[in-house]
Amino acid sequence: MVIIEFNMRNLRIATIKVFILCVVITSITVYLIYRNENNVYINEDDVESVTRHQANNENTMKTKSTTKTPKIPDDISKTPRASECPSDRISGNYQMVPINSTENRSKLILLWNKPVDWTIENTIQAKCQYENCYFTKDKCDITRSDAVMFHSPSLKLEHVLKKIPGQVFVYYSYEPPCYTRGRLKDKKWHNFFNWTFHYRRDSDNMQPYVTFTKRPPKDIQEVNIDELVRSKNKTIAWFVSHCQTESKREKYIDILQRYFKVDIYGKCGPLKCNSMANRWNNGFKCLDVLDKYQFYLGFENSICRDYVTEKQLFTAYKKNNIIPITRGAYNSYLYKPPGTYIDTHDFETITDLSKFLKEVASDSKKYKSYFRIRKYYKAEEPWHYSICELCKRLNNVDRYKRLYNDLYKWEHEIDGRPVCDENPKDFSYIKDEDGFIEATYDLYA
Image (cartoon, rainbow, N blue to C red):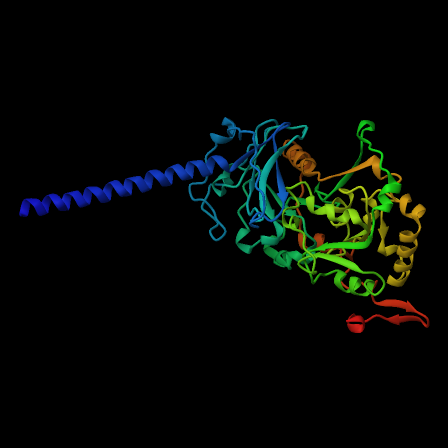
């Protein structure tokens, strides 16, 4: 009996050891796979585009790149990594060995706090001047990264890292200042960032939402405008997901609906489009509903200088058969082909805008005039331009030395003036038979 109990005990111990060994092997395998997937190569024929869409939405289609991710080159992989990896809460105890800034050496860019609603996917063609830049999301690469990118809306004070000599800290923001919620006010951020990666025209790496380029002659398609006009049986459509905004666009449209019926699609209206949540990946099928409308509302959630998004541009210009009505940055005319849109800022009141829309909608000649030059332009999302610029700067870092003393001030002011109009008045008054009257929000509720 003693011998049997002893053997049973040994058997149980051996079973536990085998189980622990299996767990360790599985963990190591998963870690190695994760490490391999976390490095993205940028070159002329293989640039991973950071696609802006809700990745956590159950309907979001995730397209895997067919291009195999290249191995990180030896001049990076042989550089020691941090023995104690930093995290969102732990700064890490890593050595401050200067970064070798030799030109043409491979460059590593660490995405410190990549947003959860981004995916890195869809290999695109980008003819960059330099082809030696790589992305990583592994914080252990902090000691060998030439640049570290910090995403504004999810910044924390815990992200104030020790900067290794020769390393560049890049501030990335694709949203207006109101969405940073004052995170940069703390003096710990002073003299921290070297470069900006921003939609603003005065940023170091300008990243516009949309650019327009001329179509090659072979790509110009003639549109039967007469048939297009006859196919319209509705007036105005609006796609929207944020119902309360800094620009108070919802109040503007409440008043506009006194004159026109506005069909509202999305979270803030009664109409739905099954493809809306997935419009970034399914060929913009949801935009097909616009074929029957004369106008589309491209209203921004904030009225800030240079903040011109796909709401004004890509959404409407992706369809070549609708006129966008835009409301946003006062300098948005710099971003749009002239004569192809109607801007609310050109009208003193909503009443004046409404009268003009009625004229255009009822006069086929005026309506067709907005399509005269549309066929010569195409809208593009230019992600790769900014990535190429960032890689060029990292290869010539001595030419682009810079340090922002107060980035909060840079983001909120230009020449002492606010970047954003936080109290727009363009919806405050309308005209009636007696002249101007105040248009309070609940006047037409």
